[in-house]
Length: 446
Image (cartoon, rainbow, N blue to C red):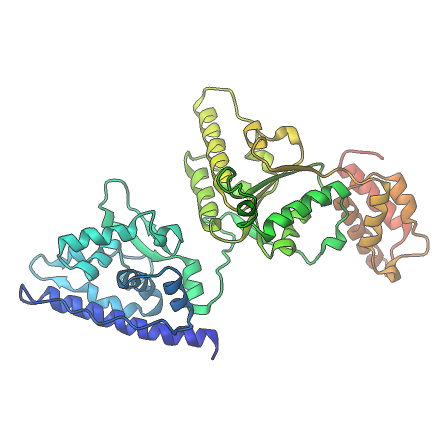
């Protein structure tokens, strides 16, 4: 049976159980005092192969926790099942306060809060209500494992007024069995990057490749390496690396190719969206990225990191204090992140010393020498049929100091020119013209 069908069948049973439980709670709440509450038994999931059952077993969930998880799922799976919560208090001519809930912008159905969960599980039993509160503690796996999203209304609002929602990753895993991979947005200022190129397309100095292999080893055994060497108590988890060097020397491509080394997703942080003029917003934007990446096999790549990870200012103005506060926050989140963080900078001196001391490695991507440039020219034009008889890559490599990125730009220009002239091959003239344009763009003449 298809995985989605297996998941749907298990969820139907769980929805039926939850609905019966909700009806039982209502019947008991409005019954005569002293009537015992008799909740229906939860379905047995021991032999269930669904993703939902897998999550329940993974966290050894008790029935109360299954109820809270299903409550968060209901607006997505069976929203009408919560319509019972719209029941009005005829005496007060309003909704029952103890039912909790909140109203969405477009969704017409009932959206739960922690108050809703407390009502279903505890009714008006104060001792049980106090027990239920621990389910919404930051130390509980609902929060720690990012299964649920709890949106607080503010410091003065009651604990149970917190909005209760299923985390997107958990929802996708439960319904389709797949892992959620968030898209770039204002709320999530990071983009998953990939490339059709491979390590064979990248020309690196031997010492750089050796450093990259060290990161690959860490990627392959992130949790066991420190334990095997007895360093897990003294050394913080995670790996922090600085890539620095001139533009176009392979920093971004190397970070992107980490996908191949460790079967990990690489997310590029868009610093223009992260930095905010409003105090506290930068930290909030970054927290969303770090929080989602915390328990996933992600590599966080801060490209052009100079803008945000620069040197601290020595001034005492409000703006200076705000900038230093942002840097301190970033430093702490990066240091605590259990995965791999890569920062890319054009200049090593642009990085704040407090960050630099915490890097496990700082890798310099130098401009390629003549031999490396020849390899780059040859690899960009792997299809020899497209190369004119007058092309001399050796001459270009010996004469012009270009980065790999610049050589790629020249190749693109030459191909466009050849196509424009109706030719099937690029000529030496096309390449030389492209090189001239690239040098002018960089403010050079040779």
